Picture: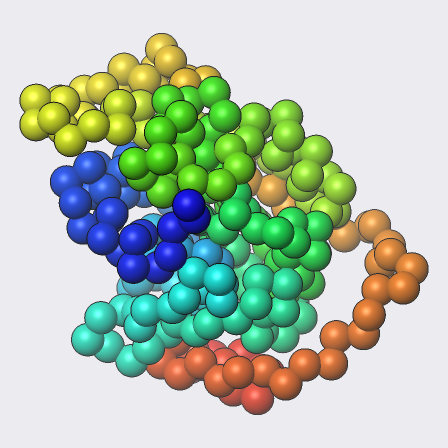
Length: 250
């Protein structure tokens, strides 16, 4: 059974979910240590990791797929989250400098068109960071967490998918080495387990993180439909807003 937005929210509110957020968030920040002044998009359920960039990014937006639902984000502040079909994002062409995808690709029924839509909204010098369950990790082998739902991937599979969608893989890392258990003694030892895993057990991490850039010399496939969209307004996006299909920076 695939997770919806309530399942995902509740998972990250648990002790194990908090450890997962810290371990994966550390890997995200290692790849993107400073996003000051950037336009940043999160697709799927990426808000646990987007939060790390608040105060840095010039515009910070979360788009959640209609198949999982949407929750307002950030809590207690102007909303910067919206609901959309993953292959029809409510954003202008070339508007995002960084795109973070989490809890999305593994359950997508439209992977090629989804990634082509990401390609469309990304700036030509932008970067994509994709988080997916690692086929070789233990987290993909149990459905007690969101990382055990949907399709896990090997690095080879993801690299082929990205190249087919006109992205160039740049680097990859793994994270989340603690077993998916709620036993207190293991949760308490999570920082040490993560450090050991990052140094000695790299291929066994529960999550793969792959950074990629656009392959901008590739041509648009014949028959690609024109993108004439009526964009959805998203208000209160950090120091910028989306209005009538344009990203207005403040």
